[in-house]
Length: 201
Image (cartoon, rainbow, N blue to C red):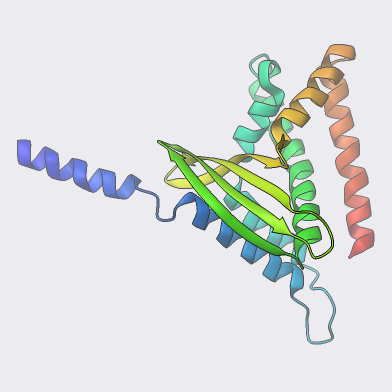
């Protein structure tokens, strides 16, 4: 019985072990996004499904549920399950567009991965963008292990946290107005951004 239990533990541990490390997860996703951004069809035009493919890659890399929970912070627990689900959806749309715009801006630049720090089920992947005519841009990916996959729950651009920035903005709106007002702003911002995105394609 003891040997069988030990063998089971070894198998369970092997199943739970991540197939890729945090740095590899980030680097692979960024390379795939840039490849999609630089891809053109036979006539030299941008494929119509480009943003759909980038969204798919982003949803593999980011734990949007966790990002949304951290951004809403102390206001998260008081929301109903339906409200939480709606907020995650709206915030995911906002973050996807923000991340895509960032990566699109860096697509022609050199990106270096400088360090990987592990702390149990948490990790930080440090990278930098090296533009030709501007100073370096530091990008740190904060990650955790979720369902045997390393996923991002925060991104720091030159030391400024995505989550902290949005958390401050969301808290100010909720305190000054209401949670409902914040949701309406997110709906409008996503709608306005979607219109702009369609014009770009």
